[in-house]
Length: 208
Image (cartoon, rainbow, N blue to C red):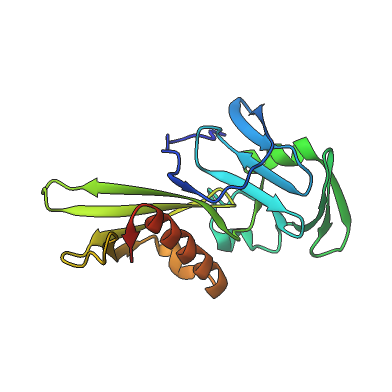
């Protein structure tokens, strides 16, 4: 499976905390992998802002959210586990349906997450890339926020400058377009998404 179909810019805003990462090759792709207990964190590919993060108490499920819809992954035929412990060598989860205990070698679970055999659920957004774009018309400008979720997905929102409303040093923006999937977020997840976008825009001198 190709883990890097398109090159992407590294984010110019990140809420990443400091992690102890080590380089690794997963299915022929360069990756960075967190080695600390309590959390799985993968940068796959290493040079991409896309990431996968699973915490204790989080969910791992069969299927690849990057190529299948959320509805497809909610099929009762696909297994889901609640992750109980993430140690340096092993990860323990509980089957959501049967209650059975499952133990993975940590490196095996990391590989399955990286290649899409398994996925996690979307719960937060640690990385946002803000780009100021100019159209064919010199007066046609837009600001695009590309937001990266912990399940390896990315989402985008597009804004345009509001003329004559500078608000001090901040440049005012208004939303004009958004990824359709954002409208399907539950309220709490949408609040987290909006906060991540607002923080990234403010770091670049914009206000919405």
